[in-house]
Length: 302
Ligand code: GLY
Image (tube, rainbow, N blue to C red; front, side, top):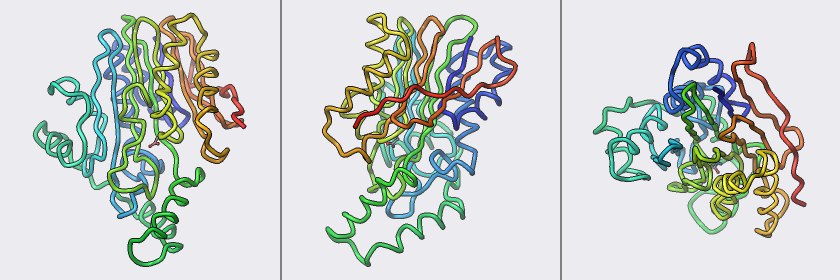
């Protein structure tokens, strides 16, 4: 049994570990670990406290996947609900669909009794307002250009949480949740709710999830690409490195080539790979006394 996450997910691993040791299944473990990060107001990239879109509204994306049958559920652009990951799980378990967006996702969340939430914190609102000071009044081509510059500033804009797990019965699951790029265009969906881009889990081979510029992993199907490399016998590190090297061919400038992936093979081996030389990821298995932060393998794309 093991839980792996992006570094900001370590509080989630800590929070669910004792239940997980006592038999909590992989799917519920990744969902509950995600709840903890979605409730962490200090994390401005996920759930409550997430930075809002250009209009000042927090729009959430999330997906969850169960590896034995590759069942998946996702929501994009969901407003006003505390735990988008649980709405994604309900999409998977209750609806015949995989991905619900915007108003339709919110209506579904209400129908299934998801808990409403006031997502915009004072701190996130202040950061948003400060960013907007550099923008002219009104909507025009110019404002769009400047807003795009804001959203693409990696110091300000990116973040997301990933969880991957194998439980004591050998079942596998993965979960991803985010508020997406800050100041994003309203209605923009990133890679987190796109199965195969930001999240993929196939219990025959393993699971992978991404953080970083979602537009890249959508274009390159990065999470699925990682799992394909696992299926061909690559180690988690080799699979992540190959999948990130694939982004080189997207012909984007260095400041936009930002991607991080966590990988868990079905044999329990794991890895983290990143375009950031200082990035880490978190994990814990029965051999650990606490959650461990490990440096990711760095891939230079330029
Ligand atoms: N990877 C998160 C996003 O691009 O929204």
